[in-house]
Length: 458
Image (cartoon, rainbow, N blue to C red):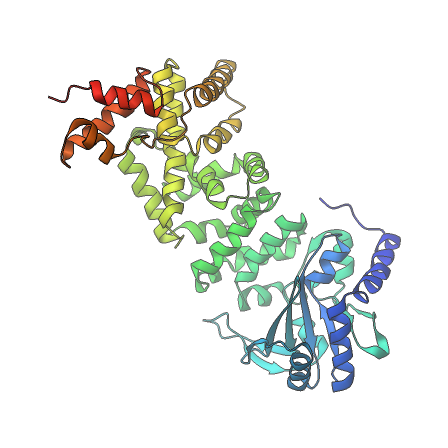
Protein backbone atom coordinates (compact mmCIF):
# COMPACT_ATOMS: atom_id res chain seq x y z
CA UNK A 1 0.00 0.00 0.00
CA UNK A 2 1.13 3.57 -0.57
CA UNK A 3 2.67 5.09 2.54
CA UNK A 4 0.48 7.64 4.27
CA UNK A 5 1.31 11.20 3.27
CA UNK A 6 2.39 13.73 5.88
CA UNK A 7 1.13 17.32 5.53
CA UNK A 8 4.64 18.46 4.58
CA UNK A 9 4.93 15.93 1.75
CA UNK A 10 1.47 16.80 0.48
CA UNK A 11 2.12 20.56 0.59
CA UNK A 12 5.32 19.99 -1.38
CA UNK A 13 3.39 17.86 -3.91
CA UNK A 14 0.73 20.54 -4.28
CA UNK A 15 3.41 23.19 -4.83
CA UNK A 16 5.07 20.98 -7.46
CA UNK A 17 1.65 20.39 -9.03
CA UNK A 18 1.21 24.13 -9.66
CA UNK A 19 4.75 24.44 -11.01
CA UNK A 20 4.41 21.40 -13.32
CA UNK A 21 0.96 22.24 -14.65
CA UNK A 22 2.05 25.78 -15.57
CA UNK A 23 4.75 24.25 -17.80
CA UNK A 24 2.37 22.05 -19.85
CA UNK A 25 1.91 23.79 -23.21
CA UNK A 26 -1.69 22.74 -23.81
CA UNK A 27 -2.69 23.87 -20.30
CA UNK A 28 -1.23 27.32 -20.98
CA UNK A 29 -3.19 27.50 -24.24
CA UNK A 30 -6.43 26.40 -22.53
CA UNK A 31 -5.90 28.95 -19.76
CA UNK A 32 -5.31 31.70 -22.35
CA UNK A 33 -8.46 30.83 -24.34
CA UNK A 34 -10.48 30.81 -21.09
CA UNK A 35 -9.28 34.32 -20.30
CA UNK A 36 -10.39 35.75 -23.65
CA UNK A 37 -13.79 34.01 -23.56
CA UNK A 38 -14.51 34.90 -19.91
CA UNK A 39 -14.86 31.20 -19.09
CA UNK A 40 -14.08 29.72 -15.69
CA UNK A 41 -12.18 26.45 -16.05
CA UNK A 42 -10.72 23.93 -13.63
CA UNK A 43 -8.50 20.89 -13.93
CA UNK A 44 -10.22 18.08 -12.04
CA UNK A 45 -10.10 14.36 -11.35
CA UNK A 46 -7.55 11.64 -12.02
CA UNK A 47 -4.71 13.83 -13.31
CA UNK A 48 -4.44 15.62 -9.95
CA UNK A 49 -4.91 12.40 -7.99
CA UNK A 50 -2.21 10.60 -9.95
CA UNK A 51 0.24 13.49 -9.64
CA UNK A 52 -0.16 13.48 -5.85
CA UNK A 53 0.51 9.73 -5.93
CA UNK A 54 3.65 10.28 -8.07
CA UNK A 55 2.01 8.52 -11.02
CA UNK A 56 2.20 9.79 -14.58
CA UNK A 57 -1.06 10.47 -16.38
CA UNK A 58 -1.79 11.79 -19.86
CA UNK A 59 -5.55 11.90 -19.30
CA UNK A 60 -6.73 15.41 -18.42
CA UNK A 61 -10.26 16.31 -17.31
CA UNK A 62 -11.35 19.95 -17.41
CA UNK A 63 -14.64 21.36 -16.17
CA UNK A 64 -15.98 24.57 -17.75
CA UNK A 65 -18.32 26.89 -15.85
CA UNK A 66 -19.26 29.67 -18.30
CA UNK A 67 -19.41 30.25 -22.08
CA UNK A 68 -18.69 26.59 -22.82
CA UNK A 69 -19.47 26.55 -26.54
CA UNK A 70 -17.66 29.82 -27.22
CA UNK A 71 -14.62 28.48 -25.37
CA UNK A 72 -14.65 25.19 -27.32
CA UNK A 73 -15.04 27.01 -30.65
CA UNK A 74 -12.18 29.44 -29.92
CA UNK A 75 -9.89 26.63 -28.72
CA UNK A 76 -10.64 24.49 -31.79
CA UNK A 77 -9.89 27.43 -34.10
CA UNK A 78 -6.71 28.33 -32.24
CA UNK A 79 -5.40 24.74 -32.40
CA UNK A 80 -6.88 24.12 -35.87
CA UNK A 81 -8.28 20.89 -34.47
CA UNK A 82 -11.83 19.61 -34.52
CA UNK A 83 -13.02 18.10 -31.24
CA UNK A 84 -15.27 15.10 -30.89
CA UNK A 85 -18.42 16.24 -29.12
CA UNK A 86 -21.16 14.58 -27.08
CA UNK A 87 -23.61 17.47 -26.83
CA UNK A 88 -26.14 15.55 -24.76
CA UNK A 89 -23.62 15.42 -21.93
CA UNK A 90 -21.86 18.70 -22.75
CA UNK A 91 -18.61 16.78 -23.30
CA UNK A 92 -15.79 17.42 -25.81
CA UNK A 93 -12.69 15.35 -26.50
CA UNK A 94 -9.32 16.65 -27.67
CA UNK A 95 -6.10 14.77 -28.41
CA UNK A 96 -3.03 16.96 -28.24
CA UNK A 97 0.43 15.41 -28.52
CA UNK A 98 0.42 12.66 -25.87
CA UNK A 99 -2.52 14.11 -23.93
CA UNK A 100 -6.16 13.04 -24.08
CA UNK A 101 -8.24 15.94 -22.81
CA UNK A 102 -11.93 15.78 -21.91
CA UNK A 103 -13.82 19.04 -21.45
CA UNK A 104 -17.15 18.91 -19.67
CA UNK A 105 -19.66 21.62 -18.88
CA UNK A 106 -20.29 21.84 -15.12
CA UNK A 107 -23.47 19.94 -14.40
CA UNK A 108 -25.84 18.25 -12.00
CA UNK A 109 -27.08 14.72 -12.68
CA UNK A 110 -30.30 12.87 -11.85
CA UNK A 111 -31.01 9.24 -12.61
CA UNK A 112 -33.88 6.97 -13.60
CA UNK A 113 -34.00 3.78 -11.52
CA UNK A 114 -33.74 1.60 -14.66
CA UNK A 115 -30.81 3.37 -16.30
CA UNK A 116 -27.31 4.55 -15.47
CA UNK A 117 -27.54 7.31 -18.12
CA UNK A 118 -28.15 10.58 -16.27
CA UNK A 119 -30.43 13.51 -16.99
CA UNK A 120 -28.19 16.59 -17.23
CA UNK A 121 -28.69 20.06 -15.83
CA UNK A 122 -26.17 22.90 -16.20
CA UNK A 123 -24.69 23.86 -12.83
CA UNK A 124 -21.69 25.17 -10.86
CA UNK A 125 -18.30 23.78 -9.81
CA UNK A 126 -19.48 22.52 -6.41
CA UNK A 127 -22.40 20.55 -7.89
CA UNK A 128 -20.08 19.13 -10.56
CA UNK A 129 -17.64 17.95 -7.89
CA UNK A 130 -20.52 16.52 -5.86
CA UNK A 131 -21.77 14.33 -8.76
CA UNK A 132 -18.39 12.61 -9.19
CA UNK A 133 -17.66 9.05 -8.14
CA UNK A 134 -15.01 9.36 -5.40
CA UNK A 135 -13.60 12.16 -3.26
CA UNK A 136 -10.09 11.57 -4.62
CA UNK A 137 -11.49 12.50 -8.06
CA UNK A 138 -13.26 15.68 -6.92
CA UNK A 139 -10.14 17.81 -6.30
CA UNK A 140 -10.20 20.86 -8.59
CA UNK A 141 -7.26 23.06 -9.64
CA UNK A 142 -8.00 26.54 -11.01
CA UNK A 143 -6.64 27.35 -14.47
CA UNK A 144 -7.99 30.91 -14.34
CA UNK A 145 -5.61 33.87 -14.50
CA UNK A 146 -6.94 35.54 -11.35
CA UNK A 147 -6.47 32.51 -9.07
CA UNK A 148 -4.30 30.06 -11.06
CA UNK A 149 -3.21 27.09 -8.94
CA UNK A 150 -5.84 27.48 -6.21
CA UNK A 151 -7.08 24.07 -4.99
CA UNK A 152 -10.83 23.62 -4.38
CA UNK A 153 -11.40 20.50 -2.29
CA UNK A 154 -14.80 20.64 -0.52
CA UNK A 155 -15.06 16.84 -0.11
CA UNK A 156 -11.60 16.39 1.47
CA UNK A 157 -10.16 14.33 -1.38
CA UNK A 158 -6.61 15.33 -0.45
CA UNK A 159 -7.19 14.04 3.07
CA UNK A 160 -8.44 10.71 1.63
CA UNK A 161 -5.30 10.47 -0.51
CA UNK A 162 -3.28 10.92 2.69
CA UNK A 163 -5.26 8.07 4.27
CA UNK A 164 -5.25 5.83 1.15
CA UNK A 165 -9.04 5.66 1.21
CA UNK A 166 -11.66 5.42 -1.56
CA UNK A 167 -14.83 7.16 -0.41
CA UNK A 168 -17.83 8.73 -2.15
CA UNK A 169 -18.45 12.50 -1.90
CA UNK A 170 -22.14 12.02 -1.05
CA UNK A 171 -24.21 9.17 0.40
CA UNK A 172 -22.64 5.98 -0.94
CA UNK A 173 -26.01 4.33 -1.54
CA UNK A 174 -27.01 7.13 -3.90
CA UNK A 175 -23.63 7.15 -5.70
CA UNK A 176 -23.69 3.39 -6.35
CA UNK A 177 -27.42 3.07 -7.02
CA UNK A 178 -27.37 5.95 -9.53
CA UNK A 179 -24.48 4.47 -11.51
CA UNK A 180 -23.80 0.86 -10.45
CA UNK A 181 -20.69 0.61 -12.63
CA UNK A 182 -19.03 2.81 -9.99
CA UNK A 183 -19.04 -0.20 -7.67
CA UNK A 184 -16.63 -2.09 -9.91
CA UNK A 185 -14.76 1.12 -10.73
CA UNK A 186 -14.10 1.61 -6.99
CA UNK A 187 -12.66 -1.90 -6.86
CA UNK A 188 -10.60 -1.33 -10.01
CA UNK A 189 -9.10 1.91 -8.66
CA UNK A 190 -8.35 0.20 -5.33
CA UNK A 191 -6.34 -2.41 -7.29
CA UNK A 192 -4.62 0.18 -9.47
CA UNK A 193 -3.43 2.53 -6.72
CA UNK A 194 -3.45 0.06 -3.80
CA UNK A 195 -6.04 1.95 -1.71
CA UNK A 196 -8.65 0.63 0.71
CA UNK A 197 -12.35 1.08 0.04
CA UNK A 198 -14.05 2.71 3.04
CA UNK A 199 -16.21 0.44 5.21
CA UNK A 200 -19.26 2.55 4.42
CA UNK A 201 -18.66 2.10 0.67
CA UNK A 202 -18.14 -1.66 1.04
CA UNK A 203 -21.44 -2.02 2.93
CA UNK A 204 -23.19 0.06 0.28
CA UNK A 205 -21.71 -1.96 -2.62
CA UNK A 206 -22.93 -5.17 -1.01
CA UNK A 207 -26.36 -3.63 -0.42
CA UNK A 208 -26.62 -2.39 -4.02
CA UNK A 209 -24.99 -5.38 -5.75
CA UNK A 210 -28.19 -6.31 -7.64
CA UNK A 211 -28.07 -2.91 -9.37
CA UNK A 212 -25.07 -4.12 -11.39
CA UNK A 213 -27.57 -6.05 -13.55
CA UNK A 214 -28.61 -2.84 -15.33
CA UNK A 215 -25.03 -2.40 -16.62
CA UNK A 216 -24.06 -4.09 -19.89
CA UNK A 217 -21.79 -7.09 -19.43
CA UNK A 218 -19.34 -5.54 -21.91
CA UNK A 219 -18.80 -2.51 -19.62
CA UNK A 220 -18.45 -4.78 -16.58
CA UNK A 221 -15.88 -7.04 -18.25
CA UNK A 222 -13.94 -4.01 -19.48
CA UNK A 223 -13.51 -2.92 -15.83
CA UNK A 224 -12.80 -6.51 -14.74
CA UNK A 225 -10.04 -6.83 -17.35
CA UNK A 226 -8.50 -3.60 -16.07
CA UNK A 227 -8.46 -5.15 -12.59
CA UNK A 228 -6.69 -8.24 -13.94
CA UNK A 229 -4.02 -6.06 -15.58
CA UNK A 230 -3.10 -4.17 -12.40
CA UNK A 231 -0.04 -5.03 -10.31
CA UNK A 232 -2.28 -6.29 -7.50
CA UNK A 233 -5.42 -7.84 -9.06
CA UNK A 234 -5.82 -9.87 -5.86
CA UNK A 235 -7.11 -6.70 -4.18
CA UNK A 236 -9.88 -6.42 -6.76
CA UNK A 237 -10.75 -10.14 -6.78
CA UNK A 238 -10.96 -10.11 -2.99
CA UNK A 239 -13.29 -7.09 -2.98
CA UNK A 240 -15.46 -8.61 -5.74
CA UNK A 241 -15.86 -11.74 -3.62
CA UNK A 242 -16.37 -9.84 -0.34
CA UNK A 243 -19.09 -7.59 -1.80
CA UNK A 244 -20.72 -10.51 -3.66
CA UNK A 245 -20.40 -8.65 -6.96
CA UNK A 246 -18.51 -11.68 -8.25
CA UNK A 247 -21.68 -13.79 -7.99
CA UNK A 248 -23.72 -11.14 -9.78
CA UNK A 249 -21.26 -10.92 -12.68
CA UNK A 250 -20.57 -14.61 -13.26
CA UNK A 251 -23.82 -16.30 -12.23
CA UNK A 252 -25.02 -16.59 -15.85
CA UNK A 253 -22.30 -19.04 -16.82
CA UNK A 254 -23.86 -22.42 -16.10
CA UNK A 255 -20.51 -24.10 -16.72
CA UNK A 256 -18.90 -22.46 -13.68
CA UNK A 257 -19.84 -25.47 -11.54
CA UNK A 258 -20.99 -23.90 -8.31
CA UNK A 259 -20.40 -20.15 -7.95
CA UNK A 260 -19.42 -20.56 -4.28
CA UNK A 261 -16.90 -23.21 -5.30
CA UNK A 262 -15.47 -20.81 -7.91
CA UNK A 263 -15.25 -18.12 -5.23
CA UNK A 264 -13.33 -20.49 -2.92
CA UNK A 265 -10.94 -21.54 -5.71
CA UNK A 266 -10.13 -17.90 -6.57
CA UNK A 267 -9.80 -16.93 -2.90
CA UNK A 268 -7.12 -19.59 -2.49
CA UNK A 269 -5.22 -18.32 -5.56
CA UNK A 270 -4.91 -14.61 -4.76
CA UNK A 271 -1.10 -14.55 -4.48
CA UNK A 272 -0.78 -16.57 -7.67
CA UNK A 273 -3.04 -14.12 -9.53
CA UNK A 274 -0.65 -11.31 -8.59
CA UNK A 275 2.33 -13.43 -9.68
CA UNK A 276 0.81 -14.12 -13.11
CA UNK A 277 -0.30 -10.53 -13.75
CA UNK A 278 3.22 -9.30 -12.99
CA UNK A 279 4.71 -11.78 -15.45
CA UNK A 280 2.56 -10.85 -18.44
CA UNK A 281 0.22 -8.19 -19.79
CA UNK A 282 -1.53 -10.75 -22.00
CA UNK A 283 -5.11 -10.55 -20.72
CA UNK A 284 -6.07 -13.87 -22.32
CA UNK A 285 -3.30 -15.75 -20.56
CA UNK A 286 -4.50 -14.26 -17.26
CA UNK A 287 -8.01 -15.50 -18.16
CA UNK A 288 -6.52 -18.94 -18.91
CA UNK A 289 -4.87 -18.93 -15.49
CA UNK A 290 -8.13 -17.98 -13.75
CA UNK A 291 -10.11 -20.61 -15.62
CA UNK A 292 -7.72 -23.57 -15.57
CA UNK A 293 -8.23 -24.47 -11.89
CA UNK A 294 -11.96 -23.75 -12.08
CA UNK A 295 -12.50 -25.90 -15.17
CA UNK A 296 -10.26 -28.70 -13.91
CA UNK A 297 -12.13 -28.86 -10.60
CA UNK A 298 -14.36 -31.54 -12.19
CA UNK A 299 -11.73 -34.28 -12.37
CA UNK A 300 -14.09 -36.77 -14.06
CA UNK A 301 -13.83 -35.04 -17.44
CA UNK A 302 -10.21 -33.90 -17.39
CA UNK A 303 -9.14 -35.37 -20.71
CA UNK A 304 -12.31 -34.67 -22.66
CA UNK A 305 -11.46 -32.02 -25.24
CA UNK A 306 -15.15 -31.53 -25.99
CA UNK A 307 -16.00 -31.02 -22.30
CA UNK A 308 -13.28 -28.39 -21.81
CA UNK A 309 -14.09 -26.65 -25.09
CA UNK A 310 -17.81 -26.46 -24.21
CA UNK A 311 -17.11 -24.91 -20.80
CA UNK A 312 -14.77 -22.28 -22.27
CA UNK A 313 -17.23 -21.54 -25.08
CA UNK A 314 -20.09 -21.13 -22.58
CA UNK A 315 -18.06 -18.72 -20.43
CA UNK A 316 -16.97 -16.65 -23.44
CA UNK A 317 -20.55 -16.52 -24.75
CA UNK A 318 -22.23 -15.55 -21.48
CA UNK A 319 -19.64 -12.93 -20.61
CA UNK A 320 -19.60 -11.71 -24.23
CA UNK A 321 -15.85 -12.08 -24.42
CA UNK A 322 -14.44 -11.77 -27.95
CA UNK A 323 -14.00 -15.32 -29.25
CA UNK A 324 -11.97 -15.96 -32.41
CA UNK A 325 -8.30 -16.52 -31.55
CA UNK A 326 -8.70 -15.49 -27.90
CA UNK A 327 -10.92 -18.43 -26.98
CA UNK A 328 -8.71 -20.84 -28.94
CA UNK A 329 -5.65 -19.53 -27.07
CA UNK A 330 -7.30 -20.07 -23.66
CA UNK A 331 -8.41 -23.56 -24.70
CA UNK A 332 -4.91 -24.51 -25.92
CA UNK A 333 -3.29 -23.21 -22.72
CA UNK A 334 -5.60 -25.32 -20.56
CA UNK A 335 -5.26 -28.43 -22.69
CA UNK A 336 -1.46 -28.10 -22.92
CA UNK A 337 -1.45 -27.84 -19.12
CA UNK A 338 -3.39 -31.11 -18.96
CA UNK A 339 -0.96 -32.76 -21.36
CA UNK A 340 2.00 -31.73 -19.24
CA UNK A 341 0.27 -33.00 -16.08
CA UNK A 342 -0.15 -36.35 -17.85
CA UNK A 343 3.54 -36.38 -18.78
CA UNK A 344 4.58 -35.59 -15.19
CA UNK A 345 2.52 -38.46 -13.84
CA UNK A 346 4.22 -40.88 -16.24
CA UNK A 347 7.73 -41.29 -17.65
CA UNK A 348 9.12 -38.17 -19.31
CA UNK A 349 9.95 -39.76 -22.66
CA UNK A 350 11.50 -37.78 -25.51
CA UNK A 351 8.87 -38.83 -28.06
CA UNK A 352 6.06 -37.54 -25.80
CA UNK A 353 7.87 -34.21 -25.37
CA UNK A 354 8.34 -33.92 -29.15
CA UNK A 355 4.60 -34.40 -29.61
CA UNK A 356 3.93 -31.76 -26.95
CA UNK A 357 6.28 -29.30 -28.65
CA UNK A 358 4.84 -29.93 -32.11
CA UNK A 359 1.30 -29.31 -30.82
CA UNK A 360 1.95 -26.51 -28.31
CA UNK A 361 5.44 -25.17 -28.97
CA UNK A 362 4.21 -21.61 -29.41
CA UNK A 363 2.57 -21.46 -25.98
CA UNK A 364 4.73 -23.74 -23.81
CA UNK A 365 6.40 -20.73 -22.16
CA UNK A 366 2.95 -19.60 -20.98
CA UNK A 367 1.88 -23.05 -19.81
CA UNK A 368 5.09 -23.52 -17.83
CA UNK A 369 4.26 -20.26 -15.99
CA UNK A 370 1.14 -21.98 -14.64
CA UNK A 371 3.37 -24.59 -13.04
CA UNK A 372 5.36 -21.89 -11.25
CA UNK A 373 2.20 -21.23 -9.24
CA UNK A 374 2.16 -24.84 -8.01
CA UNK A 375 4.97 -24.28 -5.50
CA UNK A 376 3.03 -26.07 -2.76
CA UNK A 377 3.34 -29.39 -4.62
CA UNK A 378 5.71 -32.17 -3.50
CA UNK A 379 9.49 -32.10 -3.96
CA UNK A 380 9.16 -34.99 -6.45
CA UNK A 381 6.71 -32.91 -8.52
CA UNK A 382 9.10 -29.94 -8.42
CA UNK A 383 12.02 -32.10 -9.57
CA UNK A 384 9.96 -33.53 -12.42
CA UNK A 385 9.09 -30.00 -13.58
CA UNK A 386 12.81 -29.14 -13.66
CA UNK A 387 13.60 -32.28 -15.69
CA UNK A 388 10.73 -31.53 -18.09
CA UNK A 389 11.88 -27.93 -18.64
CA UNK A 390 15.43 -29.09 -19.35
CA UNK A 391 14.24 -31.72 -21.83
CA UNK A 392 11.90 -29.27 -23.60
CA UNK A 393 14.73 -26.75 -23.95
CA UNK A 394 17.14 -29.43 -25.23
CA UNK A 395 14.71 -30.87 -27.81
CA UNK A 396 13.61 -27.45 -29.05
CA UNK A 397 17.25 -26.42 -29.46
CA UNK A 398 18.82 -29.57 -30.93
CA UNK A 399 15.85 -31.01 -32.82
CA UNK A 400 15.03 -27.53 -34.17
CA UNK A 401 11.31 -27.93 -33.60
CA UNK A 402 8.89 -25.56 -31.92
CA UNK A 403 5.44 -26.01 -33.48
CA UNK A 404 4.21 -28.46 -36.08
CA UNK A 405 4.45 -27.09 -39.56
CA UNK A 406 5.62 -29.59 -42.11
CA UNK A 407 8.85 -28.45 -43.84
CA UNK A 408 7.54 -30.17 -46.95
CA UNK A 409 4.37 -29.14 -48.79
CA UNK A 410 1.61 -31.31 -50.20
CA UNK A 411 2.67 -30.32 -53.75
CA UNK A 412 6.23 -31.47 -53.04
CA UNK A 413 4.96 -34.80 -51.72
CA UNK A 414 2.85 -35.29 -54.87
CA UNK A 415 5.90 -34.67 -57.10
CA UNK A 416 8.18 -36.96 -55.05
CA UNK A 417 5.67 -39.84 -55.07
CA UNK A 418 3.99 -39.13 -58.45
CA UNK A 419 0.61 -38.76 -56.75
CA UNK A 420 -2.51 -36.76 -57.43
CA UNK A 421 -4.24 -34.75 -54.71
CA UNK A 422 -5.96 -37.17 -52.33
CA UNK A 423 -6.27 -38.22 -48.67
CA UNK A 424 -2.99 -40.07 -49.10
CA UNK A 425 -1.12 -36.73 -48.93
CA UNK A 426 -2.60 -36.01 -45.48
CA UNK A 427 -1.72 -39.53 -44.34
CA UNK A 428 1.89 -39.02 -45.44
CA UNK A 429 2.04 -35.70 -43.52
CA UNK A 430 0.82 -37.54 -40.41
CA UNK A 431 3.47 -40.22 -40.90
CA UNK A 432 6.13 -37.49 -41.17
CA UNK A 433 4.93 -35.92 -37.93
CA UNK A 434 4.88 -39.28 -36.13
CA UNK A 435 8.37 -40.14 -37.40
CA UNK A 436 9.66 -36.84 -35.97
CA UNK A 437 7.89 -37.49 -32.66
CA UNK A 438 9.41 -40.99 -32.45
CA UNK A 439 12.86 -39.61 -33.20
CA UNK A 440 13.22 -41.65 -36.42
CA UNK A 441 14.00 -38.48 -38.38
CA UNK A 442 14.91 -34.92 -37.45
CA UNK A 443 12.89 -31.80 -38.16
CA UNK A 444 15.01 -31.21 -41.24
CA UNK A 445 13.76 -30.85 -44.82
CA UNK A 446 16.48 -32.98 -46.44
CA UNK A 447 15.86 -35.85 -44.00
CA UNK A 448 12.10 -35.56 -44.48
CA UNK A 449 12.42 -35.64 -48.29
CA UNK A 450 14.55 -38.79 -48.06
CA UNK A 451 12.01 -40.30 -45.66
CA UNK A 452 9.15 -39.59 -48.11
CA UNK A 453 11.14 -41.02 -51.08
CA UNK A 454 11.74 -44.27 -49.15
CA UNK A 455 8.19 -44.42 -47.78
CA UNK A 456 6.12 -47.38 -48.91
CA UNK A 457 2.57 -46.06 -49.31
CA UNK A 458 0.88 -49.27 -50.42
